[in-house]
Image (cartoon, rainbow, N blue to C red; front, side, top):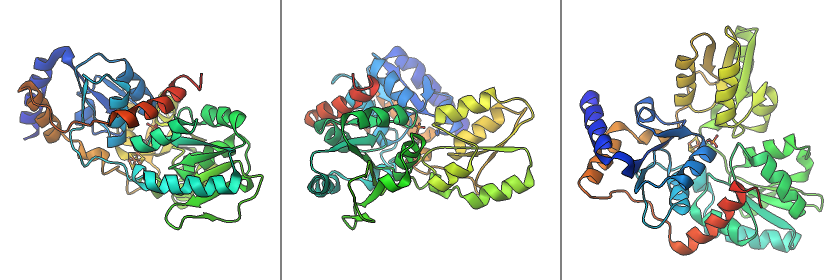
Length: 346
Ligand code: 13P
Ligand code: SF4
């Protein structure tokens, strides 16, 4: 049962001492966050992974995050994902072959004027692609600064795989929707007519969790609570972000709720585990999900106590299970893209 697993995990964790580092994304289950040495959003976890000297990193998050940790650590350090099925449906929406074909079509259309930027929610191969073509990775907490900087380097950019983060961030920077165009990687065509004023080419990908927050839900809740404030993650659609009071990365959502006055009422458009944790941490405020059906990220939730305990106990026995290892050629180019983000193109 759960209690036995907790005891076993605690014992294994203690045995491994500082040979083990456990990063936990904010969307992880509470029973996993309880074991995290660092909890954070994807940027914070990338930075923490880059600086740890532990031999083993048991990454409690999804596959692309574990890949990033592997890219940013030494060859000797082993990165482990407790459940190999913990992927990300958004990252799966851009594969490298589609991206190479898109690049060919896009450069035929626009010549050598495009810089590729990829959300960290992408495979190592896509990060490497960006590294090869002068581009970088971004996260939701630095997308704005990165897009602004990218547009001083090239006339336009290809933003993948999340059309919403790309559109919302570019719009906030003053780029009108008419200067953005969607590239559909399945049909291998633009949605709409490309023209010379295009600044941002958006890959047609999205997050299946954040897509479930709608303006209808928001209007209904605003009708029920007259002092309601709404904060959403920029992976939500443009319409939802426009109708919300605030939008921002996981970190910004946490900081906003933490500093909000007692007695305020909030609807939050992001992953369920984080919303529930904020509600139980800030009992002096009324906090609810923007979607009454809640919105779990099913793949984040695949990391559970049973898988976690199993890989720790294997480590105690000297066995590395579920290792995430990015091949050296891909890792080198992906590291270039990640470093351009971590050091703001410097
Ligand atoms: P951040 O942690 O960068 O806010 O991203 C949210 C997310 O969807 C992670 O998969
Ligand atoms: Fe991917 Fe969305 Fe889950 Fe984040 S919340 S890991 S973007 S599916």
